[in-house]
Image 1 (spheres, each protein chain N blue to C red):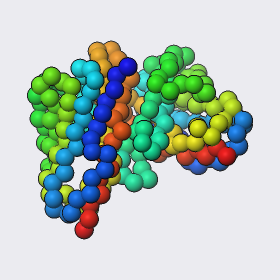
Image 2 (cartoon, helix red, strand yellow; image 1 turned 30 degrees about the vertical axis):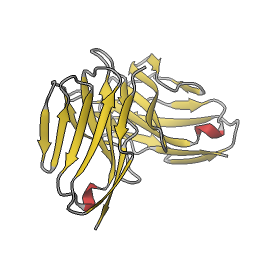
Image 3 (cartoon, rainbow over the protein chains, first blue to last red; image 1 turned 90 degrees about the vertical axis):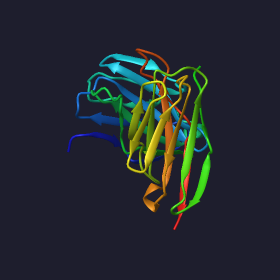
Length: 113
Length: 112
């Protein structure tokens, strides 16, 4: 089915390990985003990408790395996971209509022990 | 940086009662969006408001954008159990900006 998919949906890892969260969209949307959602903080932008090979920092980029070699994929890597990175991560893409609608993936729940 | 504040954080209502959540930005917004997130789900777009003073309705939901384009509200008339979830407002700070800043959301519980 077309849409935006994230994997894995659930991940448990240990402090210091590298973790990559995958995001794939089939709409050929130019803009893609990574948000993290924590209780009491709402949704905070980590990184975003305007197109392949173009990425930029959001509000909370420290400890994260992104890449965008292809339009449809936007992986998020935690190079050395910390407990404070325990969160639910949402990938989103920006629709082509003039509504400015963001389409979100189902989310990836990450627990860092 | 831009801040978007939303109140209340939580709201419990009896089914059939009305509900309102308010959103205020520290800066003028080019537009404002509203999203709904069901428990365990992901945010889903509801609407975008662009014009100063704009009012839009979707069935029992009424959305307003302030005259100064710094505040907005979502009002639900006669809540139903299907309205349960967290409602977020989000704004773009300026033309050409693609960084959408979200409020912390209002979690709505509806008591049957």
